[in-house]
Length: 146
Image 1 (tube, rainbow, N blue to C red):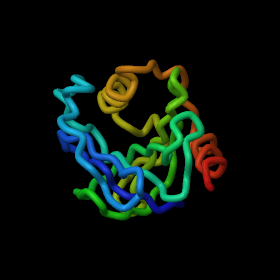
Image 2 (cartoon, one colour):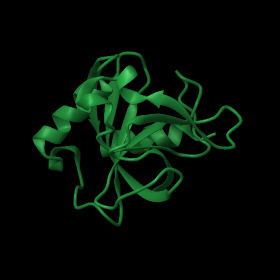
Image 3 (cartoon, rainbow, N blue to C red):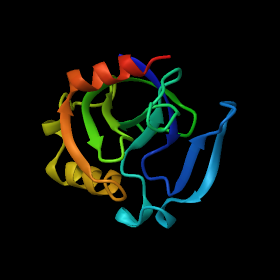
Image 4 (cartoon, rainbow, N blue to C red):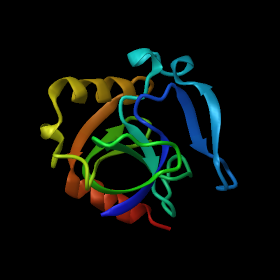
């Protein structure tokens, strides 16, 4: 179980990220300018975990949260990792669920259409080369702690 902070809520059409000073979240413009899949609409909640570092990118690791609860930028949420999407560029993504608001327990519990959307959306620029289980995702987060 981890606490994560929402950068881009599900349904958002804006690219939002934690600024370099780690003092706030900045708006980088429309998502569809970078990812036209799903008309640039974020298909899940895009979050980060404080005090983690993706060695490839040098910033916090990216978490994709599945939740039944509507969330907004800056919300903090307790999550449980269920999958690790390994990308060709090394900017891997963790798929997790909102502990209190999701019946999903593993990757294959996600409806097929949603899984396909996640793979095409987050694999648009850099191919997803493998999908690993929740245990691999948990280990990835632990190794990324700073």
